[in-house]
Length: 399
Length: 160
Image 1 (cartoon, chains in turn blue, cyan):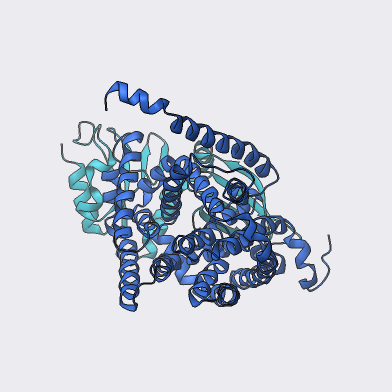
Image 2 (cartoon, rainbow over the protein chains, first blue to last red):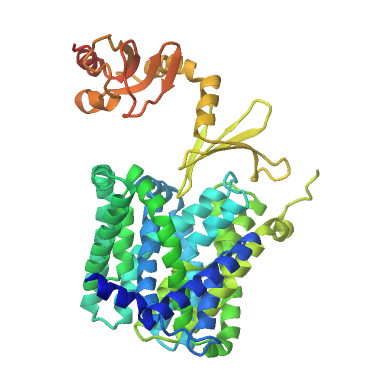
């Protein structure tokens, strides 16, 4: 492109509108997010709210930047899953698998059914049941890890079990996400089976392979200056995500696998380089999910979402209670574990996002309302775990 | 001493052990090499109370003060406990091939199966040196492995 046409493109009214809209949205979210962080809450519900307000049927309509937001949201999803994969090493997977598989089973058995039942009745289909089961099952790794950190609980006895539950959910997501991605587009039984087998195999191969080759591949990939490392890692991730999309297995899974494959120094470096980018595009992803939901559709599902939130708050507390008890924590530690785990966030939105894109639009408002409630309520309640545990203490504690 | 080590996925590692006076101590080492040292609440023994936090340099200083010189002694005990495992000290002579190179350049682990667990320079002991650690003449490496492995390591390190 010549300099003249570049200049022309830069000054077209479309671009100006896009820059203005996107800039205002980011700036307002940055200011509001600061306030929200000050009171110890996650910005995720804020992003969703912003999307609802800005979207179709909302108070202010965005139009110039919707195309850009759609691409940005896809990047956000990929970066969320990539950094999630980078978080965990295969050592951590194996240590969690050795100790906490029963916690993972309890987690699934208690938390997926309420959502599945709600999905069956409210969304009126077994696909709805499958999707909503996932929504209520999976805690928000982002919110939970943040709250544990903010409340200074890293040294607490219940914390390893809390993190173990998150890791287990994330492992299972590697199989569940492609499954949902295929099912919502209405694939045949064979297509579903192939997609799931392929992605589970890919994840297993990568987890095992990264123990042996991860270090070497990672060193090749990250043996350069920051700028080149960023481009290489992001490039590889997009390629793999593109390939998995071609195979109908959702870009998210491909990105997750790349994250898992990078270990040690390479993972650490990529994490540091990619997290600012992840923060930006994850915000776009959440806003964009909010945009896809018409706020007018929220009030009718508000009651159902509240009941579902209340029920699955209790089931998550039971999950945390069980998991923390396995690590020898007392009633207060168990209660703290349960309440902090109750936050649902990015994964719920990712799952519902797959369904909405595939035409199950009813999953959108229900999930949005549900996540808005639990992403706010859980971090607040988590502060008062000791209070809620009082009835379970055997005897009054002498000071 | 009975140190319980737990992985904290996404965070780092957590070590916990009991003190003679009945208190318990917990050290969380995060991935970005911060160390959070805590005791536990008397009312709720599951709650960690942070005593202090150390960054990488501070932790190294503290470790040196507290115990690195004792590592060699500990190693001797360890090799006595595991049959077939030996530990020896090998000096990098002045003018050795590896004078001025890094520990990684020696490729000791790949070539001999033995590991360098500490490096003694003057009267300072560096525990678990990284492959990027530079070597200079006069350094003493504490090598641990099988007797044959150590002999091989010695012949590699002593090439001029």
